[in-house]
Image (cartoon, rainbow, N blue to C red; front, side):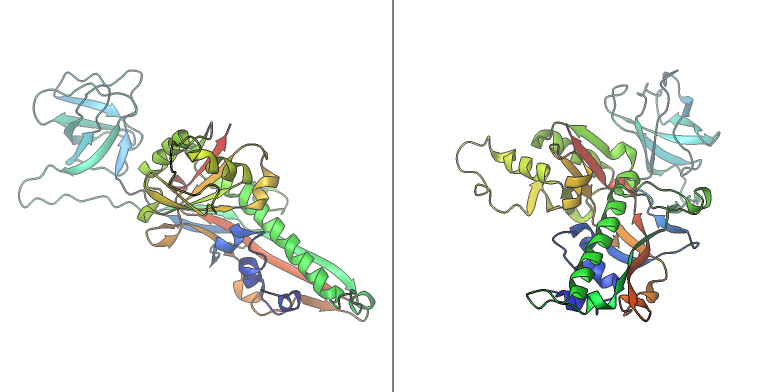
Length: 378
């Protein structure tokens, strides 16, 4: 337990993580890091996706097949070179898929592929094309294109609570002996964490340079890739299907995941087993801190701010991947971190008052937006 008196002795970074974690659990789970970049923008590197692949982009006209070679259009040829062997995923055009080799890279979105024997099959639009090998003779060298991580950014926002407190008020105490200073300090910290949590969840980025200097960070709902925002009835079957689609994109590395939910989503999760006949795997309404879906143990926690920021009678769930390639996948980046360590809350004192200030220049970093999702129950 941290008393309100102890709050005065803690630095801002510690307050963000440990004070009143049951009211602000998102901030308690966020890893801290130093911001990199300019004074107003934080930059970080996103991991390249694990599977080297692209998608066929030929709906009109479709990939016809029927010949030994064909120029095809794909989403991107950036990661491929002449001599690569690629395989068309099993699809509606060719039930078994097909391995071919690349004879030429014709543009940023076009390549010519050649069959090893017989003719090319007709493959469906959006079929995945996966790197599977090289067409080389013994001793040949094929220069592989390495995939550089992409650079992402977010605007650094000033999150602060400041107020002038007169000494004559601070010298008083409540009937239980607690000082007014302690009470007001606790309230200031609470409001600071409310602002920071709301920004981290639903903030809309406003770049300071184009917004008259009034910068604001993008929150989690904006940073998650738009393809990973799902909706539908919040049943176990539909939710499982959605999680499976995230897993295909590399989510839940190490077979671990985190579900940040509102109270409605948690209530519906309790109902997932209500239709079971006989003895269920869990006791009725036993504490639900972990749930297994697709064999993956998901840690569940309720973020109270989600009950206020989203519609309260619908399930809202963030599915998060805790780590990506041994790196924290969700971080709070600070600017000038050392300036807050060990600093007292009272930053400006005059003859009659002092300013109680809690402040942070911070922004949210989401590593690899494809490995996280947001589900909106209908």
